[in-house]
Image (tube, rainbow, N blue to C red; front, side, top):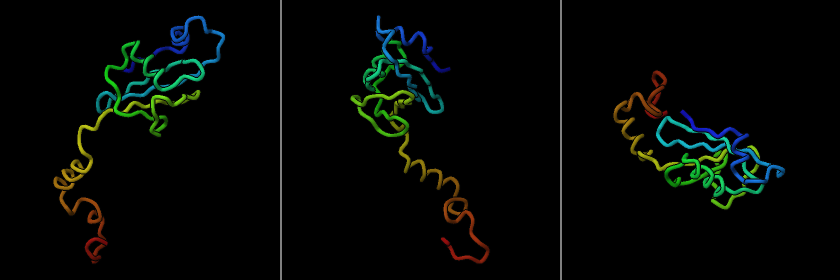
Length: 129
């Protein structure tokens, strides 16, 4: 269940009395738990930064903790990055499992014959080719 602010009401909440100013529309994506992504649509004034978007999300109770890192379309950004119309701001959480450890555990459970280079060996072919 994603929480979202309709674009029409977000514009009026952001800056009071600035209805004539052009707005930029962005989406904020945050996965607070594995397999659960929340999307919010925001309308912010032109020239708004990542910090402004985070402040807006916190003001509406959508964001409880500070994200570990942030990105726009997968590219890491800082709080001072200026947002553009149509950006998707992604808020990253800390990893719960080390990726190398998870791979080792998968390999151990599948066995050497069912994983990696050994999975599709040609009949009569050499090991590892």
